[in-house]
Amino acid sequence: MATFQTDVLTSLGRVRGTTDHRTCSWKGIPYALPLESRLRFSPPEPLARWNGTLDASRFGSIAPQRSLLRTKVGPDCLTLNIWSPAADAKRRPVLFFIHGGAFSHGAGSESFYHGAYLASRWDIVVVTCNYRLGIFGFLDFSLLDGSCSGNNGLRDVLTALRWTHDHIGDFGGDPQNITIAGQSAGGTMVSALASMRDTHRLYRQAIMMSGGPTQLQSRDSCRISSEAFVTLNGIETCNELYAADLQDLVTKQKRFMRKHGLGAATFRITVDEDLVHEFPIVAARKGVMDHLPFLIGTTKEEMGFMAIKPLARLIDVGNIVNKGLEEEDPQIRQELLDTYVALYGEDRGIPMMYTDLLFRISSTWFARNVASGQHAWMYRFDYETQILRMNGFHAIHSSDLPYVFGNFKTALVRPMFLLTPDMSQVRAVADEVQQDIVSFMREGSLPWDPCTDEHPLGKCYDDPPTIGEMVDRRLDALHDRTRYKYRSFHGISL
Image (cartoon, rainbow, N blue to C red; front, side):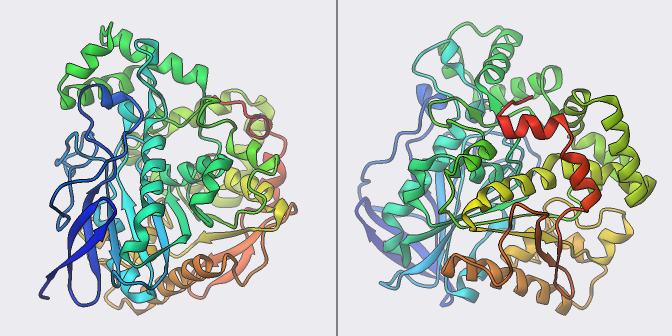
């Protein structure tokens, strides 16, 4: 399909993107200055005006990380991407989507998140962004130099969100109707942003997909990790961090994760009492989110890959769960294990227990507390393709992303549909998911009952969709007795 140039004049300057007659896109728009020298570990500095016309026809660099697939890294990574049906005066709902990746990898430019289909199918605007990851985004080197700061990844996202609020009207979007959404680490970011009352003016609704509202850390925990990194690598001044090669720092980060970290949970948002004042569940209990419409959910078997031992070792999520379980009474630990095995069998018992501990139980706790204002709806993504079922993965973490964005042909997701020659059922499920998301964006509500303080019900996406319990009642009651729940409701991190 032929593409053409499309220019937009903003208060910062002219931006040149592309259009294919169905969707316009502007890619790699910088929302902050490049991460040169001191800016690597300091708050982002918003970009001032540029001269001439900014070429936004292709994606820019991504945040420093180690990956065989993601190689285009660079200091000029603080960029965002926009898809819109047209850069006109129409005020369309805006989906501001925050990517996942355990706060250590990923990018808003990944094929998972391309917004062309959503924008053209539903007449909305889609925005994705990059943010700092790993040591750059979630450690705090102010212990070496007061000009450094923590939570820089979250600060980046907030800066990109402010940019979107200020300029999306030039791209056919409605700055008064922005929905923030995120999956996995991005979902955790959504819960953190919602806990910050002064951010609410920037958006109207929030969607947390497979996020962990309990997976934040205290200021002391962050300091211990930051001290461990500089000690392990013999770093004595911030000038050494500023002068180091970016990829060399990423290599040091990998070594640090092996020796000190909590596997996939090594990097976390910090409740620093400066930017983030409360753990999300605590903030929800205090009524901070009472008037914020929320859609909260998970996949049915987030940790299904744990049934495949090599994958379980490769995607290391066990450390943080095991550390948490160590704090439980031995009788509770045994009851948890016995109950999960009784409900799901020997092979699926542990993956389902990890699914609940990392994602689903905390999501229901969060929803119940947000729901004091009757503005929270829950969902669960249950649909699984034949190949996921055969491999024992079932509806695993991230398997819902193709259905959310309508991208089924990209290399990363194509294997999920190898044994699905007829995609009509898949597309019907995707249409159901997307229709609810867009309805929520437009109306701030959904056509099933919102969550209550009682046992939570929600929509289960399958063929056909149903309304059902988000968690088995026996498990819900058992988790109510855990130390984990006490910590979560009182803002005590691991």
